Length: 325
Image 1 (tube, rainbow, N blue to C red):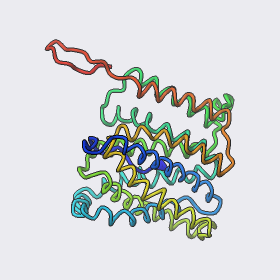
Image 2: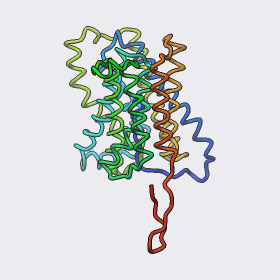
Image 3: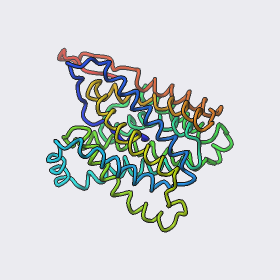
Image 4: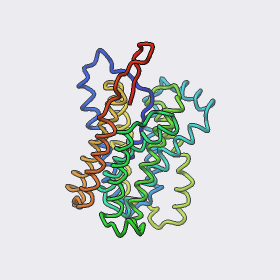
C-alpha cells in the first residue's frame, strides 16, 4: 500500500514469448490483495498501533521474499554498499512514512475514503516529476491535477464549503493525503535514482530499509501505547498484511510488470479504489458518502485529463518528428 509499496522502477518490455493477457490476472489479484490491506488495517486499528503494523509488515514481507531473490543477492549487497543512504531514504519515504501515515489515518476515517484519496497519488507523481525530473506537465495534465486536487479537498472537507474556508479538516484524511504525497515522491525518487537492479530485488532492499526506519517508532509505541500487545485480531491482520497482502502482492506486481510493462501495470492501480469500496461495504459495513462520490468524480476527471491525452507529433525545422503538448 499505499497499500502497495512498489514503485515504477525501470520500464520493462513485455516478454514476447508470454501472451499479454497472462499479466492481467496477476495485476488484478495484486490490487485486490492490496485493497485487503486497507480492510485489515482498519479492522485492527483500535487494537494495534500503526508503527507496529508498519514495522512487522515490512520485516516479515522482506523475510519471505529474501530467499526468492537469492540469485540477486550479490547485486543487492553491492548496491547497498555503494548507495546505503539513498536506499534508506527512499525506503523511509515510500514504505515507512507512506504506510505509517495510512495506518494512522485509518484510525480516524473510513477505508473507502482512504482508498479514494490514495487514487490521487499518480496525479501527484506527474506534478512532482515536473519539478524533480523536469518531465513536461502540459495544459491537460495541469488541468487534471487541479481537478484531482479539487476532489481531494471535497473529500477532506466532507463537502462542507464552510469547513473548507475555515480549514477544518478530518485529521485522519489529512494523514492519508500525506501518505499519497509520500508515495508520489517515492515513485519519482526511484525513477530519478536509477538503482540499476530488477524491481523485485530492489523492493526487498527497500522493505528492509523501511523496516529499519520504522523500528524506533515501534519501540516508542511499546512503551507508550497500550495497544502494543498483540491479540488474536492483531496476529490475523499481521498475517494477512505480511503474506497475501505483502509478499505475494509484491511478487504479483513484479510479474505483471514483466508481462505488461510498468506503465500499463501501474495504471491498473485504480482497481484498488474499487476493490477497497467493495470490500469495505461487504466486510466493514461502510458505505459511500455523498462527498466521497463527488470527490471521486473530480479525481476520476483529473485522472482522465492527465493520462488520456497524448502528445501530438510535430516536425521541427529539420524535418525531424518531436513531441509537443
